[in-house]
Image: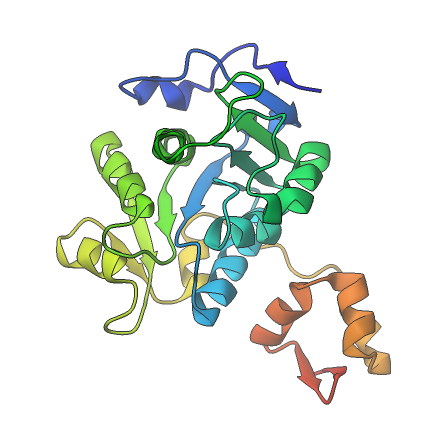
Length: 254
């Protein structure tokens, strides 16, 4: 059910034009936790996808809520990685699931996480509303992380907002020629580079160790399909951490 927030988060008071009203579906208690904003391109590289998911998962494990815009690409990956510790800020009213490709994600967030919008029912997204939405995404987070961005993208408007608000900006380390937008932020001194995710997360808190016995599932060398059914895409994170090995559609402990 769509409801109005009783009061706006204090972080939004720093905006030149804070929303007059915020509608929500889901767990509004998430707004009382520490938050980090993660945004980026709708067409991330495989490297960016993997690193974004790891960042979001790690932030969730230290008690942070990940805020993003529920768009394709980096936004969706960040929401999935932190789920259910995540907040989606929509560029349309909450009676519309947009983009349609993320309908399942958005529905899940309405049930187990939180979605927000300043728009009244039947309001569709416009090019302008995405830009307006970004100010809320940025303002809610303690810091802004831009995973990957083209120089003239909407994501770079989020960087401008963060600079205006005096928020720290972090960007993923990228190859020369990739993510020109974030490379420019580094060159101009507006952003710091994340070169090691574990070291970076340690600045914010201590990651909880894997629950005892959770990895025992892989002792029987289950199939990749069985592993995905139980853990979802989290198994790829475990592979990146070197805890499991995926080979010939089988998953084993490393």
